[in-house]
Image (cartoon, rainbow, N blue to C red):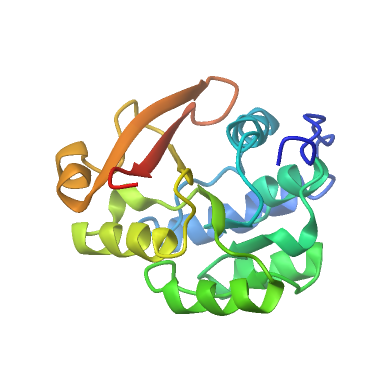
Length: 210
């Protein structure tokens, strides 16, 4: 992916106010399912792009795509459309993603049960593995079994070097590190983004047995 991401961020989207209004409404009614009322900033998008710079060829899986700011950052920085799979469980947000980007690769699915779907997509698109995972899921709010299900589903078809980059709004890992170790994963904090509301941190998870 070295030459496919240019590092040039798009300008502020004209639909930002509508995105905030939609997220606020959903956040008030489903606070444990919606991570924040504000879309991720351009600085967060740039941080995700930077962490994907060394990823091998393959599918890039985005979890919790929301209103699409990270989707836009990835596509705006040169990621080929056929490599991106954006997952969003909320039907309202999924519909917005489809209107904004078109339906190709925009899937309305539960991130806890992805292994079979990703296997089918890899075969259909002619890729061998998932090369990178980016996530804005509110995974801190998930039960431990659900956290493990998300990780295992994404890594079922992952390359040996694949990392899952996860956003959080607290300094610590949103998945407890002792739990990760027991499941065969390791965690590393890779970035802190102050120009976002709320300020954000990116953590990366990798398999320890590869």
